[in-house]
Length: 340
Image (cartoon, rainbow, N blue to C red; front, side, top):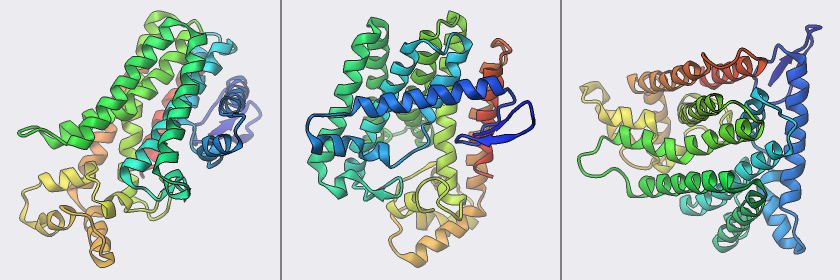
């Protein structure tokens, strides 16, 4: 996150979002520091092994995208309220818990550049650690009251529904692309929407502002996942946090692949044949990556990403003209720019 102060000095605190307001920068940095400290305190346990495993993915790093959204949304009210920090920790604990579970379901071996918890220990330990993090999130929720408990329950319902729908796949006759985007809205968009709603609500923002920020959160959440889909194909580096082409090798049908499979053009026949199954062969994997990078399917995926980003920006247009609105606009821009 690049921050431009009044003296023109640029500092960096994360995702590449530009702040033109030095006061906002200091406040967001302080808020994120509080959230990080509270996150680590939330996973403390009398059992050293439990504490080590629960802290494993926290120590591995991560973008902390959801706490950032909470911190920025809180600047439409009073960001110093302690409930803002607590609610951000609830969201991040929930996110981390789903990662432990996802890696078991996906049989993943790497997470954030380190061995995944299920490969470092085993599936049972990883599943139970995710459950432990959910329990800590629930404990914090109790202090936030019925509003937060109900919102978290509804969000968790969407997370689980999205995972089930992803596991089962689209029903007969359903559009695979519509199905995929709906899964992303549930699995990724819903929790980021809640991150925004928590920040604004507990900061005492106007109800209309809270509603708009919730919509923004869901749209930017889907956009953020779509940008990861595109990076998995287009990036020559580990910019997305994993080796390029990982989804392709594992046969995960992300949006560029779904657009390729939908094509009926004779010129895409070879590409369709390649991406219709996991690409464990190195030569076929490299060929498919090359074909996808120059395909209309990748352009279609970029256009879909841009559409979600545009909808996210549109929800910001009527918000109060405060520095946090500009920062959220910049956050939207960086989600697009990271795929360029």
